Image 1: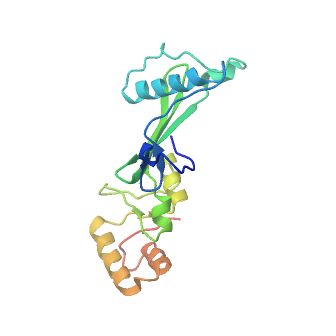
Image 2 (image 1 turned 135 degrees about the vertical axis):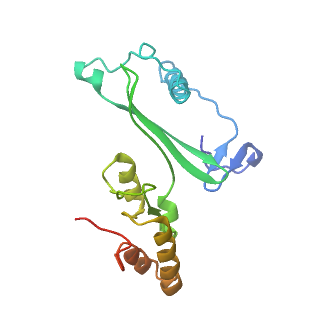
Length: 190
């Protein structure tokens, strides 16, 4: 739970890289305000992560419409570890406990905005990175991560070293040239 403005009791706040977090949290509110549902949501999240879900555990959905039985619900949590922020989440069809998507990524947008160049490169010997084809790469695109297309690790490293050596302060030129074939090191299919 993030801390708001405070003047005293600073010993009760853990200060991370970007966040001031409470060391202790309590939940209070009027009857039927959702306190138990919030605790149940954390329990559900924990069961999901630990693989303790069975399809009869959560046969719940909004019963106003029968089509809601097959709709996805999204769960996402932000985690800060050693000054790094990570986002973990998943989509699930609650009625059948069927996971449809799952993701874990470091908060990249802030890094890219600060001038860090991040390239999404495949580990496969053949094939190419197709940014925007899958949900994960859509998030990478939104964060400003560049496509490495089919460049090899060695070619990417060499190209980065050459471009940063030549245009070190001009990050936009480096980014542009990283995605431009110079001597057959990458293939851009249109």
